[in-house]
Amino acid sequence: MAAPLITLNDGNSVPAVGLGVWQTPPEDTERAVAAALAAGYRHVDTAAAYGNEEQTGRAIRESGLDRSEVFLVTKLWNSEQGYDATLAAFDASVGRLDVDYLDLYLIHWPVPEKNLYVDTFKAFAKLREDGRIRSIGVSNFEPEHLRTVVDETGIVPAVNQIELHPLLPQHELREVHAQLGIATEAWSPLGQGSLLTHPAVTAVAESHGKTAAQALIRWHIQLGNIVIPKSVNPQRIASNFDVFDFELTEQDMASISALEDGTRMGPDPRTFNFTG
Ligand code: A2P
Image 1 (cartoon, helix red, strand yellow):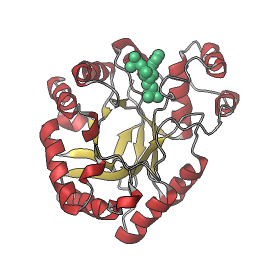
Image 2 (tube, rainbow, N blue to C red):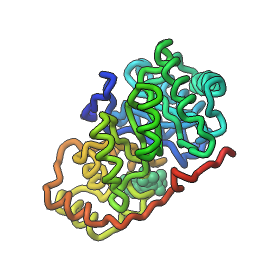
Image 3 (tube, rainbow, N blue to C red):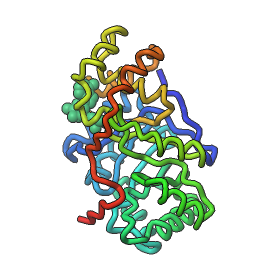
């Protein structure tokens, strides 16, 4: 079964479930992406910083699918922010991926102290005008960064990809996204695996005859999130995509949402400035 599509504010659409390859070693990436495409995924999310763009691109090419059938996302790393540096980093990424265009390009982190994310987004807009990118977005942006981009460029990012899972449901950002017309995309949707043994999650999963990962992915889909679970294991990759034949009840949604405790697994986007 195909993943439902989410329509972005620029009219393009993205499959709601994709394969994330953060923390997938380069030597495992081609096999993981190939397994995902064979299982029906048509959306793959990588980044320059993950060191596996080349392997991601190769798996897509060798799948036999037409390039237009796969929604391909990569991200601009912190050290490459700024107008000219962004144009060069884009060329390097599409070179490693060996593709003519990206479906979505994201600014990986705002790095507010550098104050370059607006110039970076202006370069994204230029690349979109030139037909090199279909949709342009951001990642790990807080409300003030989103508003600055919109105010200074007049363009609303199509997507903000953020850490989001039941422990950190990001109410405020989801509200801001709804107001501005930005799609919410969840990274670490399974809490980096930590939520898979939580009794509240396993109870919901068992009541549907599904796995904990499937229950969590459903929780995201039913909230309207784009979701990119990571796995290197072909069986888990396939089962994470087998989520379109059941629905969580309101009670199921509430019992998973009750896990909220504010835990953030990744860095704080307001201060994260790593450029290595
Ligand atoms: P593995 O790659 O060995 O399958 P997140 O997407 O939130 O970052 O979570 C990724 C983590 O969850 C990884 O450790 C991954 O391990 C694990 N994982 C992903 N899918 C499943 C699954 N269906 N069952 C068990 N663990 C999973």
